[in-house]
Length: 213
Ligand code: AMP
Image (cartoon, rainbow, N blue to C red):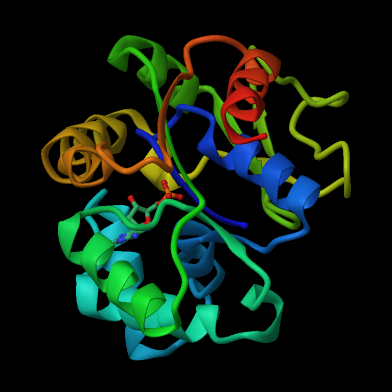
């Protein structure tokens, strides 16, 4: 099963991605997580990625596409994959198509989850992430049992720098300018499904399952 999840920041892509990846036994490939995992490295890619991410801008396409291609060649991605946060624009969408075509593969599901901008801003502002395992919480909608501590691994929860208010506005703006056009690119494909992400986690999951199984 090859799945792409598309949607603005804060729509619940990451949470849904983890569930689908586990259900279908495919790796959850989040380009955002891959870049963040490099933050402490001293490589050129890490430095460039960090600078762009902290400004709320996209990491350059050539670097992103190269990283993704290498990831798709890894053993665990040979029976399918789930992309969360990739492709983010037409250049990336075309690069992915070319790569899959060259392997005689195609996308099985392109899931576009969307919600109102004000709702997204509120969700992102309250988001907290575990420093150790990356689990995501929300100060209102998905509280940890103990404030500031991850339920799963007891790691410390923090607010991503790019989840702070000014950067969030820039990310939502970039999303609408740059990422939304890939909906036009995909929307006529049979694999494409638009899903309303304004409900809670369970409601969104149910809607996703209705269209893919
Ligand atoms: P995310 O965790 O998906 O919200 O991504 C966080 C940040 O990582 C984005 O705001 C971008 O700066 C960068 N990023 C993630 N995925 C991509 C991508 N496909 N292309 C370029 N930059 C990306």
